[in-house]
Length: 145
View 1 (cartoon, rainbow, N blue to C red):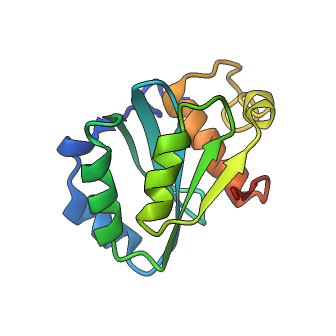
View 2: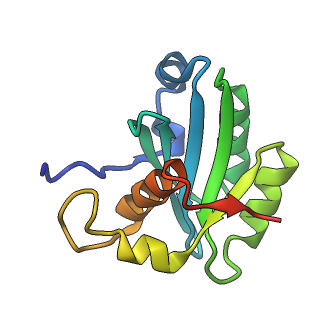
View 3: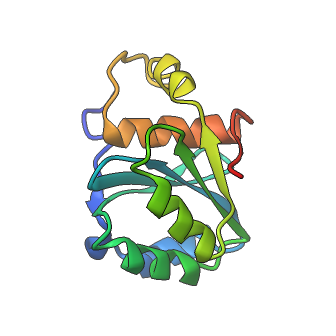
């Protein structure tokens, strides 16, 4: 296991043109580990390949992120988040308003799966986002209504 597997880039430092080429016509998921201010997310394809792991300050940088995501030439893009607390309520509303279907994954499932994919029992923000994305692709989420 490499030490830098979960390195996140700030949203405003991502090369979005490269990301656009990587996601062309693919089914994608944006998995978000929700926090009070600094959010972590991973954009992952259906082959379970993380295209980019990102972080941003919510709410200040969220409109820019949504603009960038809306411009991606994906076949589809679904957002998925843990269902913890109320910190994600405004973000979920903004995602829905931008036209993204939003799913939820149980926080217990994320916690229980923290060792499954990489053999390491720790759980931190960027890793949690990857675990959420994998759980989504495994069918362990539901539409957030």
